[in-house]
Length: 306
Image (cartoon, rainbow, N blue to C red; front, top):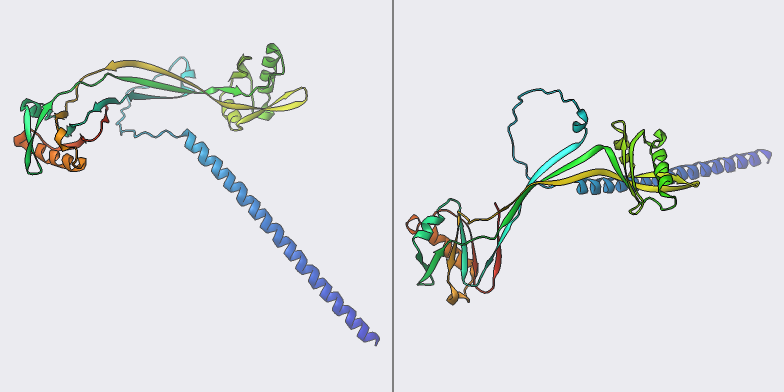
């Protein structure tokens, strides 16, 4: 009997040990799944923030290929001009033209517009009828062109969302002291510009690389009376215009055709195809057609660019 009791106890002890082992394994598995889910959520959050930051910093522009030629090596007296990121863009406005009912604009790939205009009236074959249209030159409204220059400082940052809790001089000193602390990513401050009305500041550091370290944080701790405020930091960007010009003229490749008032019930796309066929022929003074826009039922606005 005593042996049987010992065997029962050993079996119970073994079963209890197996249950505890299974519980531990399930517990560890559950903890692993929780950690994995938390990591996935953090990764997804970081990826979303990265995509948003990338989207905001992107400029969509087709940059033409340019051949560069090294000419000389210079040793400037002041290297500070090379510390900033600089770029410039040429901007030309689109010039609108109001296309009225019964008018057609036709743009050629080559400069044959003057040939078409010199021939005066043309007879375009439309619905078994030769429709007479007049080819004219037309003036364009004035447009503007200018250069946009952008300079992103590598030494200077902007600070916003500054709490209005101290007098102007004290807040200026508090900001300089806070952004000088290396443990927060700061460094020695060369210049502090504080605007109490706007609650903003512009801070220039002495050493290169400090601004980049501060900007990686997006916000920065500012301690006032033992309270921690998070002020927003952003790059200091200067934008200015150069070579602002107003221009006007005529299109060398576009002709205005009038008048087609009796064709209002026809499909505009069909008229455009027939006009394109007529003016592709050299005997009509034309050439390869780039685009045709017809206005039969309502006015349109066509845009021209330099």
